[in-house]
Image (cartoon, rainbow, N blue to C red; front, side):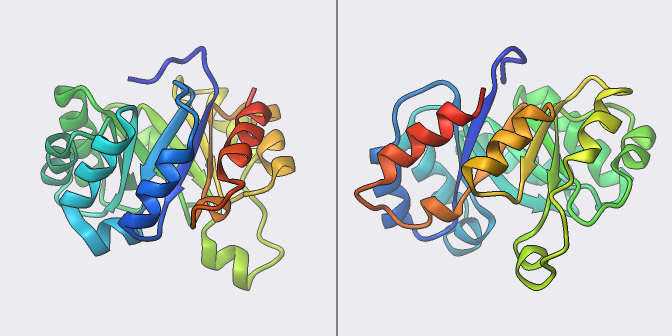
Length: 215
């Protein structure tokens, strides 16, 4: 489970397993780095892809299933694959979110709810039986690509934290400046992926630079 006193860098792996293994091999071993099995990777390689990442990293792994239905079933799949956290979408039915969070709690993995394309995340949180461990505030890749005016939802951080005791993750920014802004505004976890799509000679240094910015 995540430590509320720490700030985390989450490295999302969205390419293939060979790139994932190469990137993981270059990441510094640090408890503040979370490795994510990204949605495209999971769709390509399934449950075994998650298991591979868990075995290669040996630390905290997030499985981004973007669950929309069968909340308990998919949370259980993530647990069986050995991951430490699972992601559902905030636009899922309340019944799915409640089932997902309840199952994650029983299995002692972190429940994470991604509020991408949710205008008022607090309205979703207000209706849940129990809070997720992490709320993800997310500007999607297509939003960033096709709508340059779409902001990263930093403003939602305080709106949530003023009422609810949950960790906040920010996704959708991939520069050092965006990472710094996310933590300055109170994010507990910052997700990056663009610089970690393929392994390069700079991967290790980039990870160190991003980790230094998350404080």
